[in-house]
Length: 574
Ligand code: ADP
Image (cartoon, rainbow, N blue to C red; front, top):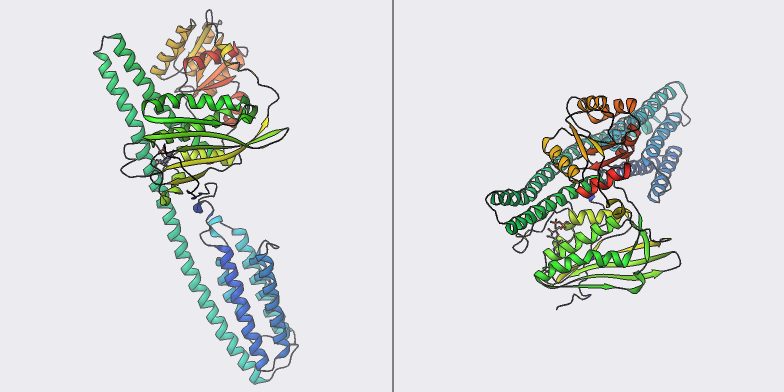
């Protein structure tokens, strides 16, 4: 058995955001610094020129302006001011107004308002449609320009110049203003083009991702579906009960696999939408890890792979966390390890790294001696729908979502998934988590509610899909319930009018004629005492559940559900 040693030092930082998640296409802060630098260098040039032609007061004024611009840029660099663009625009406007007081209109410094106006689009992030900001900047510039003209026309200049000085200065200002206008206009065109190109590229990436998603999901769902269809055809002609049971197991395994893929997509969707919920519970950490590893021990036994579970004694403790999400992470990492390891070992380790009276910090790892991952692929495997494509992986199925989900769940839990791997030698995925000790282990109530059946219970089942209706009816009558079916909300209301003896209603939400939401409204008016459970195949988050409860539903059962889940749910509200 070859062990992976610490020589594999590649460490990926999967917690990092993808660059496109916060990429500012126009790079407005950078642009603002560039405009600031242009103003600074232009100011320095004019200040030096003023000295050379003997205009010392003007030179001093422009030098003060340069110093202020420099200060603002340093403050922005240190993070002491939030918005550099408004400071730069205000400074330039103030300088030009002062210059008008000092020199009047004769030196034509008001021409600098034009490049300043052209620079506005470079200083606002159009991606965030900052109309207010653009309007503010343009207003400041126009009012300052008007102010400048009024002062220049009606106020006597503070400094006296010779005709030669004025002619020279006006000439330099004219040339500089024209040049900066041309530069800003060209930059504006260049950046707009770049901006549009980047947008197009992002758009194409989204289209590619969608196409890839549909192709991958299509493949991943068609594969087990093909198994189900094939086995169903075989079963039609099979009379041997043992063979039939075998076929049924294949159907079950294929449908479980399909459900897993669909759940992965739903989880991913929830995480992307920021609607991922955690449900902490008290559980024994050691027992949880042992239970998780058990099915893998059986599966690995079929190959030439040994499963090693290394748990430090401190983790034999009752902690508070979301055990289902933790199980999901380990199942993903272990099933990947099993998929990509043909011989050798898979090691699940949990080592206590810190402990005090209230909490325990545990370092988890799932290590394998499998095919390993090339350096170039190590960062990308955490991207959604991304898989390594080579001869060794082409026979292995998957959606490329497992690691993305693990990484995101761990990020939400305040941890980071790290990878150490070398091609041909295996991989090691690790993360640390801190747990608070739980007061006491609350025994699971699930099993208690599973006892007994639904004898004597009258259920109104409202479901528009005939197959779903048939399956639910079979399950319920299997539990000895008396079931009345209705194909939409209005039929259900008629049933309730004619028969007042229903104990509980199971109702789909999306139905023709009258949907579940309208139906519950009417039902609550006339029969508020009868509990109604919503049935849905939608993505149910906490908000949706709260909305359903507010509409009058007692609870919600998400399709597809297992028979025991249905029984547990009904017994809870009877
Ligand atoms: P999938 O559903 O395709 O397994 P994952 O996100 O879980 O999606 O994994 C993405 C890719 O990372 C896999 O397709 C595989 O190429 C690579 N990978 C993941 N775990 C391992 C591992 N333990 N050994 C080698 N390659 C792995």
